[in-house]
Length: 125
Image 1 (tube, rainbow, N blue to C red):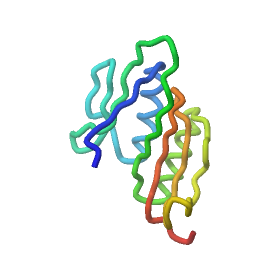
Image 2: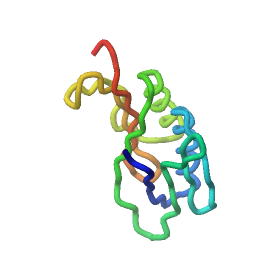
Image 3: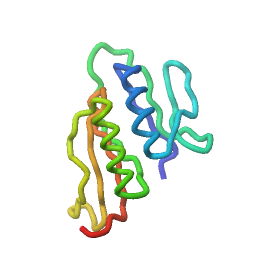
C-alpha cells in the first residue's frame, strides 16, 4: 500500500551502515545513492529512503515496520541490528495482542527511530 517513505538521519553514515546491514537480512539493498539520500528496495524500486538531517536538534522518533517472510528472518534482523549497535526495544516474540501469528522485533536505530521487523504467520504461539 505504501509507495515509498523516508526518514531524516542526523548521523547519516551510521544510519547508512545500520540500514545496509539490517535491510540486507530482509532481502533489500541500496537501489539509489545520491550521497545525501539513499533509497533501499528490491527489483530496482527504492521504497525506503534515508536522508541527511541538516538541523542541529534531534529528529523526532518515527516507527517503521519492515516485512519479513518468517520468524527466522525476524531473528536475523534483530541479531544484525544488535550487532550494529542498535538498542533493543523488544526482542523477537509473538505479539498476540496485535493479532494471532504476529511475530516482531523492535530496535532503536542510530537516530532514535523505532524500527521493527515483522512476520504475520508465526506458528506455535
